[in-house]
Image 1 (cartoon, one colour):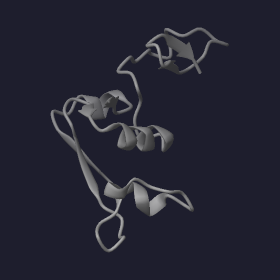
Image 2 (tube, helix red, strand yellow; image 1 turned 90 degrees about the horizontal axis):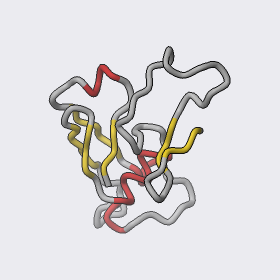
Image 3 (cartoon, helix red, strand yellow; image 1 turned 45 degrees about the vertical axis):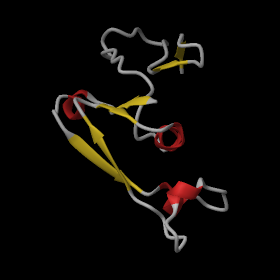
Length: 101
């Protein structure tokens, strides 16, 4: 799944590496086997973003989205473009359509 960094500044960088260990923050949840090593210690994943975009496996993408570290869409709408009372964030639904959030 493709994920995108938030903000214009990080997205302007040719390369950005994010290090995460999702199993370290999972509390009383069953985690995928590849999130831990053979000694049941949390595995670290280094995700390289190129101009704010990275392709990651679905389980890591869901974790990053739940933690608010990334977005599902590369769409950036300037605040001046959005009128008052309108949703400030847009997200894609499962069918790829935009939803106000």
